[in-house]
Length: 275
Image (cartoon, rainbow, N blue to C red; front, top):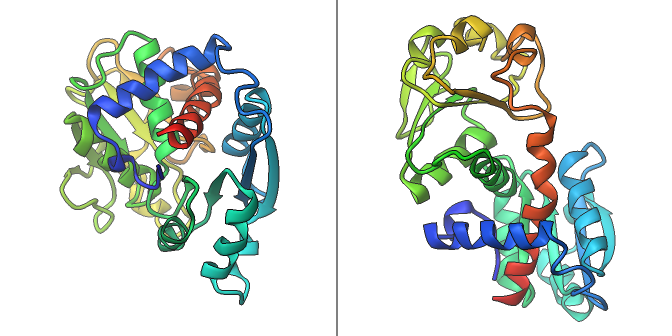
């Protein structure tokens, strides 16, 4: 089974992954992939997603063979690359900007292809955030979510999740940066009212000035629902999409929120390899 888009899964499968992640955290599957080879394609800049996939593979007992993402951009036809990979790989994990490349790999491989991030989504990251919220007792299907950021992979990833799980999702952004199908706000103080989960994404230099009214501050968080949390996607930048006082406040879910990347990505790998 491939996992290229979060909405490749249905609601019951997402919660099945959560249960599997609980078991992974307890060490139930340690060494259960001994003798398997997982091939990964990652850019040098990746930190959190790569280290948790590599550590997770190690704990499951499998071998990890790592290439740079640029390896997939060479002249050789991807069909031929996949033809050879099929001889030795038991799963392939790919972080590459072009999701259509992952689709082509899935078409030409008999082993699972797992999306570790593209320019249009980031399914493992979003599933992990949802799982981490459940660990904090949140009813993820009935919370009201606000995404603060441009139309990019994180926002579109949250849109995939809302389509599957049915939760309410809106966006706060500069004009011209709207995600199709979401209600858009253009001022953070209006946007946070009635919201429970505030998610952000980093802003590129060319749109930063267009988001001046959208910065998530502690004052803005004070106007969200009681118990609201701030979940910025790393890397985040104090003074840009989020203020320093918001990060230093009780609203910030903290660095341990991302600890669950390890067991969730192990769960995704195991699930895809055993379906």
